[in-house]
Every structure is written in C-alpha cells, then in structure tokens.
Amino acid sequence: MFNYFFKLRYMVIFIIISTILGAALMIYIGMIETFEVFKMYFLGTPLPEEFAEISRAEMAGLMMVGMLDSLLFGLVLIIFSYGIYILYIHDHQKGIELPNWLKIKDVEQLKKTLAQVIVIILFVKFLEITIEAIAKHGGILKWEHLVLPISIFLLSLGLKILFEE
Image (cartoon, rainbow, N blue to C red; front, side, top):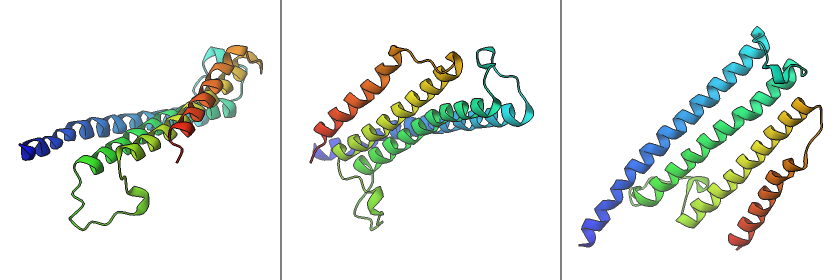
C-alpha cells in the first residue's frame, strides 16, 4: 500500500512541466518587452500619447522596469518547479552533490524563498507604478499610491514574523 502512494509522487511531474512552461512564457514575454524598448529607443517607435511629455530615455527606463516584472515572475516559476522537483522527485541517494544554495530541504524553505521573491516582485511593481504616475502626472502622486507600499510593508512584516527562527 505504501509503495502505491509513494509512486503517486511522480504525478508532481505535471506541476513541474506546467511551471517550467509558464516560466519559459514569462521569460519570452520579458525578452519581447526588452526588444520593444530597444526598438522604441533606437528606431524611434512613437511613444504612447499619455507619455508624450517624457523623453525616450525615461520611457525606456519605465519599460525596462515593467520588463523586470515578467522576468522575475519567470524566475519565481523556475524556483518553484525546481523546489518541487527536489522535494518530490529527486533521488538524494544517487550521489549527485548539489551546491548549498540549490539545496531545498523542506516545503517551509521553498515557501520562504518564494515569499521573498514575491515581495521583490511587488516592490518592482510599485516602482513601475510610481515612475509611470510621475511621468503621466508631472511628478504629482496621489494618496492611492501609498496602498501598494503599505501592503508590501505589512506583507514583509508578516513574513518576518511567520518565518522568524
């Protein structure tokens, strides 16, 4: 009976394949966004009307921050799929020695790593929204722009308390 359930762990392969495909998609989207920045900056692709007042360099910076979102989310999916593979599929007895930074010992460590990367993604998103708001509204931010940084702070505080050792 135990052997039957032990073999069911290989169903996790579907999760791993799905997240790797999702990571590949997000990295591809990030690459496309990077090419769009180069095209806009070097080939003179017209800027959207709402960004007509800012320079091409500022727009390139704004677009590159947006590109970071896609790439960081792709990284999160890679970390998740790798962690699931190590926890459920990887045979630790085969003698393949992994570096310390690649060793995932339990689900708790995987959750902590993912939570840290998600906080970084939220911070990048806040940076993108702030730069965009400054560019669109001439440097004037509204009080609504405080919602995301307050949320990031509270999330970080909660994670610190949750994962405190």
